[in-house]
Image (cartoon, rainbow, N blue to C red; front, side, top):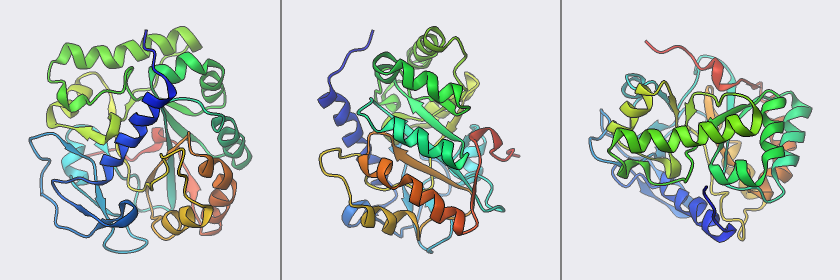
Length: 275
């Protein structure tokens, strides 16, 4: 069974900083802001990191793969851009006392969310994970050990990372894990997307995130709002980290302000059908 100390898991989250770099397609400004850049018309054959640019405030960003490119692999980074709807997602590497407050706020707003968990989260905080499921949230697969999955080309090894988490979740909750998958650190390859699809998974990237994963250097609420309010857009798949004390602090106000802007919240199970 997977065991890791908090420092190691924090390192996982720090490595997630790479997801905004998308070095193959983007250049980054300060605080992880992606400068507008041209992106390839198709998914790169080599492994890369998911990344975004925001050329127009309030509009969906440009990813380093298009919606149609991802669709052939049953993968998403945007939801229904014809509706003022937001899909809330949280990456959960470990529990540090913030997830309960996040769940309280989601319950207050009757807002569904998806929590992408790793093995350590289920092992160390089973009651929290059971609560996620009991309150109707999607619990998704973030792999058992949180490796760089793009470095795994063998189908059996890829499958084991996902199936070991499925088994642990089943043992812990008595339920089946949802068939939504998020690549650790945002690292992916075409073969990964094919492998996940072959296992019946929907791969879910994101269209809005901010630098919230440094637990010892959290953004202020003002800094968080400065990223999350102007960049929200129709059909946004929002990535937040459940270890962020800022997220736990601001989530009630954040959801309220998004609601005041006319947005509602939908589960990943309501992502639009792909052609």
